[in-house]
Length: 269
Length: 298
Image 1 (tube, rainbow over the protein chains, first blue to last red):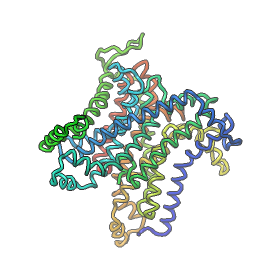
Image 2: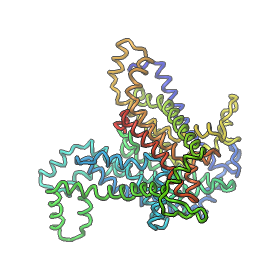
Image 3: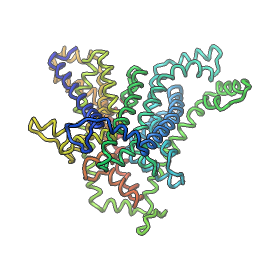
């Protein structure tokens, strides 16, 4: 260690301050869900859980939740299949355009979401596909592929190809090798990637506003009701729910992969 | 190989075996089978849509019906060039993206450094999870949380009041704070990964040769970690550039995203033409980032 004791104390304080900065807004919104008042003053004066019941019984919230779940499941399945295939190709073969492929998969999250959204909306309109669950899934799957891909690729790179060669030498065909050697290794990163993809899809709003037509996912319901002061208590409850629904899968993905699954390029170990 | 074997429900295992054997003998075909679906998806759905949008920027809008007329024109680009407002908005957005990126880079360093070089192994694991979770927490909920916090009777003024300060309110500074908050974890993670890769021996060598801590930081650590900062900045910059929700929630100022979003209904070709600006900015940015070695950190 070359860092002096003072430096280390300062760094510890700095890290702590950053954590407070990162979590304070999340804590504030969690507390607002228990605010009995319709007005959004701070600090909160009266506490209540009554808005949870109101939110639970709201038909629009229920159907939005159901749509979000269906969209996230659909996008996760598509992203898992495509991301896995791509990670196998990139990790186990050298081919012309390999760099381009790994760039192509990052592009949907590297370019601003409004560009992805407007492109897809224009194209769906031109092709004549009705906006709804299908178009939401197509949009979400496109930017979820990279999450599954990154997780699977990181594992495949750590796993030596000699296992697969040994399997082939022992007489297994490529399907048996995949089933009994490669896939068991991939199960955990794929599950972690799927959890991240689900979380990403479940709370996505920037692209979804372009691809959902008149349908409302849960984040779009929140967005539409932010402008209605009377609805804010219910918005707060739904916001807390969406927050938990996006954080819990990520926490589980982290536990599964022991902190290796950040889902963010550059964050993989 | 998987898709072929899956799609064969035949009860005779021989066919599956033969297909598998065929793939064994032809690794190139195996590769093609792996690549076909994902590459087709990305090319057709994503790149195809992008191309479609760019083509739409050369079309016209019927001024009476707002319908898109498929005849070639450069009027959209001329219009964007001639009206000052589009240039001002583009400049305001790029400036915002740059300021957010700088703020995030500065804020990310202490915690990333602490995670990479001071924290115990256990603590490091806890901190990674602690940084990753807010990154993934619902973007809209975070933006909304800041909207309530920045309100006149919100939590920020309440917290700053006792020390004689006030929050920025619903201003451009407020939006800058919100963006900085939203994308901070995207910067922390790559910087942490970059710092972790620096061998301790280099820092020891620097101190053995008599460099003071600050000197080591600016002459050894910062240059080595710089590509990682650039890698993180791709996200902070790009995400700010195209955002249309946070600006709408926090300010009444126009940014590129809000303009594109609001004009797309009446004038899709013009909106499409305007998306050339963030795309061009990002292409240049990615090109520079590549030159600076950021892609090895992605």
